[in-house]
Image (cartoon, rainbow, N blue to C red; front, side, top):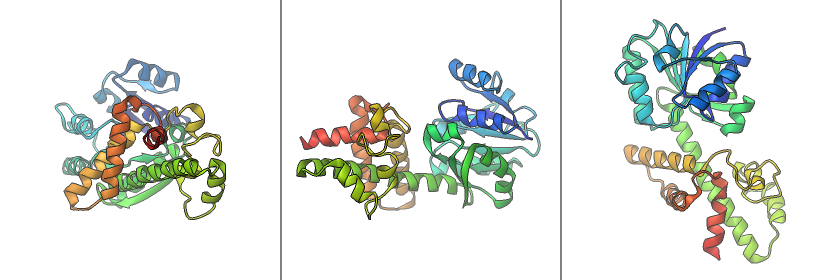
Length: 297
């Protein structure tokens, strides 16, 4: 079993680290939030006093951080992880960040003689807790193979997406589709309501035909048809509107950097921005149906 440092023990990182412990790994973790550290200790994670202490004498270090600037600071800042880490260390960044930063950190790690993977996840808080996450992994094949057992301790599906930055590229493209699809599903239910078509009837038809997608069949934005969806819990989040807005902005940034055109992505980002700025940042992203319904009214 491996000795693993885990930095970032929030809503996603905490359950992921706990699943590593359940799989028999020795995990030492750090987070800036006292409540996260307390929960980590209760889950069997050895609490460290700093990022450096969490990484000390480990075989691998996993980071799950809010944004690219935090990843840069933890890896490349003064006294960062790349400054004197154990020889042969494997670094895995599971944060969702911009592709350019992911590639820059990859290069710095490789130049310093360390293996590095970008491995953002899909599956939300529920998937993190259940150990059913999907990992999209960027990096060299030989480095990817080193991390496989750790990924499968935290998730169900692990895909090697390609070289450095490919994991982030896959995550941004996936969530670009997800954000657009959720808006389309919400609009369809609102239109059905105006036309006098029962929501359950539309669900029965579309879930078995060409309109079917995850935003309909798993995270349905209306109460009823999918009992486990956040719509049945007043949109208590699995994946917040704020996080969706973050990912759509990252997709826009990637499009600008690469010269791609994403007109629907830009419109989806504008709609989620309005929804978040109206005080809904902490709701599940499927809650955007409320704003679409209100606008229709």
